[in-house]
Length: 350
Ligand code: NAP
Image: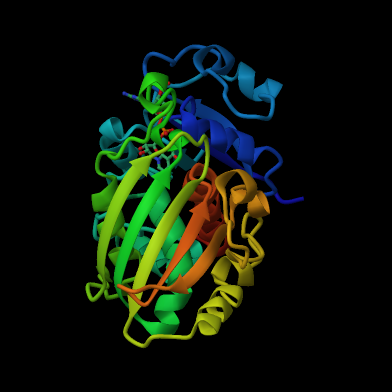
């Protein structure tokens, strides 16, 4: 059996960090070797440093691991980062400079011109930007969690019918704000109509993700105009989004459904372990998809769409749902790492 690649997790005590630990249990290619967090947690056993909030029990071996500081003295050369964005930039740069491959969930490096902002089904070809990076190792970033769900649903439509305008309104889950997140007094019996920085991310990140690869950077897809409004709602996991779209060539409803149903990307062709069989599932029922019912589809790695109908302002409107800490964070990062491995980028560290 092939030796597994050792993985270090930065921000291991947080919401995304815990999801990494849950998802990597029994992964065929990767095994957790090291966990890092802030000075507050460093030196403690993981079980004493983290308030474990995942549904599955914490594995005994992991619970006994000593939490490390986030400095590049790890044995594991593959690093998954769920660091708070206030500290991620420098720490991730330090690791990449020291020869580590960092896959990050934080916003800090997403717009560096030589850093791929990756959804493997959408822009796997952007991975080759790594070759342009000045680091001994490399950095790959995962997009914002709401952006991932929306772009997964829009990619096959953009390829076939060319999107011109998007209006999106999100209803985002609490786990998206980290742990402990929004105070209960603020969210029970309430909707919070503001998530700092989120609307700007949704209006800009798709333009890089859907862009074409140039010689040394991505040429942004600036022909699409996006307007986003983001809200926090009292759901634990799963971001729901209402999307209105206008196309250059207006398709029929059936053509849109066909595009979703036939959508496949590189992860499906390569049969990567975390790749959903269908990245997008279309529901014809009037009341689907719903966070509680569809967020765990294909282990949380598939997005769902539904309520497709003609729109009096744009061409069409529909609903998108995706699991924010799985597809939108830890699971998406693992899929990115699988693509890196499949494309040979991890050969030199294994
Ligand atoms: P979180 O629950 O607040 O966790 C933050 C992590 O960062 C903790 O492990 C914390 O360690 C660590 N940390 C804080 N200050 C540090 C420091 N000075 N040095 C080293 N480590 C430090 O946040 P999260 O929701 O997991 O999000 C993590 C990142 O992923 C953020 O950048 C977020 O924007 C992004 N993201 C989150 C989601 C989501 O659905 N939650 C989705 C996509 C992207 P301690 O416990 O020791 O403080």
